[in-house]
Image (cartoon, rainbow, N blue to C red):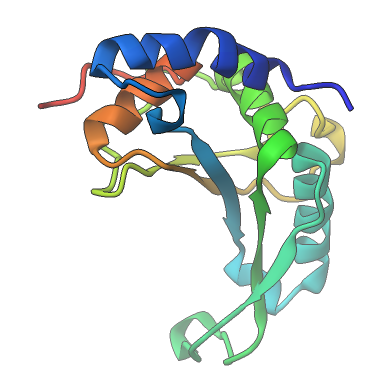
Amino acid sequence: MVTPRLLERFRKEITPEMMKIFGYKNKLQVPALEKVVINVGLGEAAQDIKILESAQREISMITGQRPVITKAKKAIANFKIRRGSSIGCKVTLRKAMMYEFMDRLISVAIPRIRDFRGLNAASFDKSGNYSFGLNEQAIFPEVDADKITKVYGMDITIVTTAKTEKEAYELLRLIGIPFTKKQKD
């Protein structure tokens, strides 16, 4: 199997740069990507299962992996959702699939977002994970815009092994995530 392009870059360029910035003495101390979770919530899927099936098909085309259907944990009368009804799908990517997805996200999908000004640098949690949302699935070239039945957004969480927000920010910046401004220290 061919090593993903982003993984090669991570090993040859990003790891030495992170070692220089943070003064790590060992390559294994350098934070790395652990997993990427893509989540799509479709409340309307409780009434029309075809919406969920098309979303599942499109997410599997985007990620190369079949998504798991998520069920409602509670009944919500205002949204006509019963406990246990299917309301979305999610995918967890690791290893080579994760690096392939991240490469396509950074180099192809994000540049296709209309009026893009950068991702918010303040969306890190205390554990060094980064979450952001996309408004439509049509920015991925794998999805045929003519065959889209419903436009939906998705939440993407990038889980890293970084101990602090600063390490995670620097890691993702070096990987190529376009942030709006420098993170507050």
